[in-house]
Structures are given as structure tokens and as C-alpha cells.
Image 1 (spheres, helix red, strand yellow):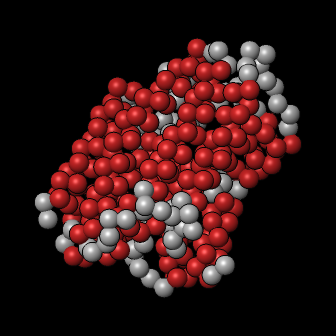
Image 2: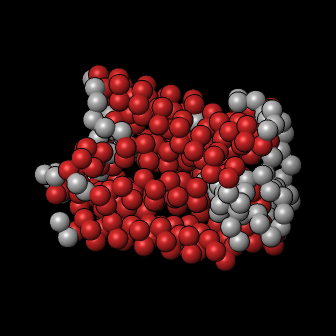
Length: 313
């Protein structure tokens, strides 16, 4: 094992350990804005430990799909995270086109939770599953167009066609330095990917993770029947997914620095993105359901504009 691989594995272990900290930071920021004391910063760790010690209540109408869904969702999120260049260090699993695998893994995890919700036979959970599937379908064009912008920029800066479609090459720090060469279209990408972070993790203004109203629930309604260790797997998988998108945004703005400085800068940016998410949820209200597709359409339009500007150079 070389030093680069060891550094990546250390950063990956740190990401797996600190992922539950991100929801705690978001809740803490929201409590500060609301003038409350709020929950402890490590509340998610306490919740996971408590749920792992509890038993499960499983409906007789469910099948093996219900119990398998949380496991598949967690495994998919962990594998997708392992494809990212964490801390600017290339993933040992990187290959040309690995962004497609990462997107497919996230889709498989979402599909497993949707199937688990439908397996309960509840119309209420089926409603949430339908909304989740619809939002993810609307978010994917913005994601893939954003990746295409990164790929065209990388090739324009001298990268090979093979490296242009690898996440480790795209987020190695070269893109962040390309801002200094007058590529203004790249300034749109952090905003687009941050919006995708809010959408894919069901945060305000798309969804409210703290709501319990039938007309507004999306993600939370799909996991109402889960309890005990299964619910713990879902919560931890959601934390890993939040870290994935935070690391994706951080990789766009982290410049090419020495190894340990880049790791520190990357971790600091991930934590700052959790703070930014808490600020957004504190100053904004949840959008009406019919306005969410307009928001995602705007994100896709910005990605398309960035791609057009990149191709015109």
C-alpha cells in the first residue's frame, strides 16, 4: 500500500466516522437561529446507538424487500462515497466513467427505500415513494449536465478523454484553479450541486425532515414503518449521502494544495456546507409542491447554460 492509498483510506474512515456529525451541525445552526438551546451536537450518534439496541416491529404484510431495503441503501451510499476523491486524493477504485456508477449506486439506494415503502402496502408511504421518485428523476439532468461541464473543462485544460470522465480526475483541484483562467461558467456549478444536495437529502426548501404533516412529507413518510436497527441503517445511510454531496461540492472549490493541507481544507469545507445548509433551512420556508419542479428545472437550465458556455470556448 502506497502513501496515497493510505491517505485516502484514512480520509474515508474519517468520513464514515464523522458523517453523523453533519445532521447535528445543521440542527445546531437551526437552533441558534431560532434562539433555542437545541439538541446536542452528537445527537445523531446517540440516536444510532439507541436504535441499534432496540428491537423491530415488522408488519405481517411485508416481505423480505422491507428488511433488505435499509441494508441496500446503506451499502449503496457507502460504495458511492468510496468512488469520490476525498481530500483531493484519488480513489483507488477510480476508473473512466465512474461518475455513472456513483449516480447509479445512489439511484439503487433510493430505489431500495422506495420498494421497502411500497412493500408495506400503505397508501401513505406509497405517496411519499411516488414523490421521492419524481424528484429524483427531475434532479438527475442537472447532475449529469454538471458532470459534462466538468468533463469538457478538463479536456479543454489538457486532460485526456479517459480522465475527463473520472471523478478523481475532475475533482483533483484542477477545476478550482480553472476559475482563475476566466471560466466563469464554473461558478454556476457549486450553486447547482449545493441545490442538488438539498434535493437529494430532502432538505428545505424541497422537503422538511422535521415535518409530520401528510401533505408535505416526502422522505420521512417512507420510513415510518421502520424501527430499531433498520431505522438506524437508514439514518446512517442518509448521513453518508449528505457527506457524499457535501464532498462533491467541496471538491469543486478546493484548490490544488499539498496533501495534508488539502485534506484539512476539504474537511473544513464539508463542515461549512453543513452550516450553510442549516442557514438555508433557517431563513427559508418549504416550497409548495408544485413549485419544486420549477426549482429543479432552473437547476437543469443553469447546468445547460454552463455546458453551452463551456463548449463555446
